[in-house]
Image (cartoon, rainbow, N blue to C red; front, side, top):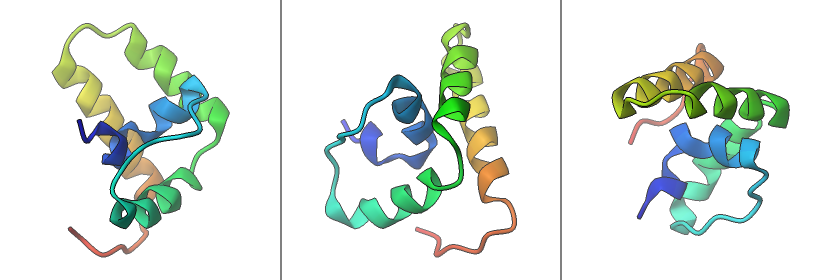
Length: 79
């Protein structure tokens, strides 16, 4: 799948300690930009929080909120 290229999931990968992901090269700048806006500890905290959720919609909402919070006030090119 393309989940590695979806920046909303990047904090979970970081929280799991995953350091290698496979994705289209064009996605790397966006993911690196976002990954510099949170710590591994914050990724671990988010992973623990969503790990206790059972509804996918709630998980996605939490990931989106985390992403939007870290990117607030930062202008980026939209897809």
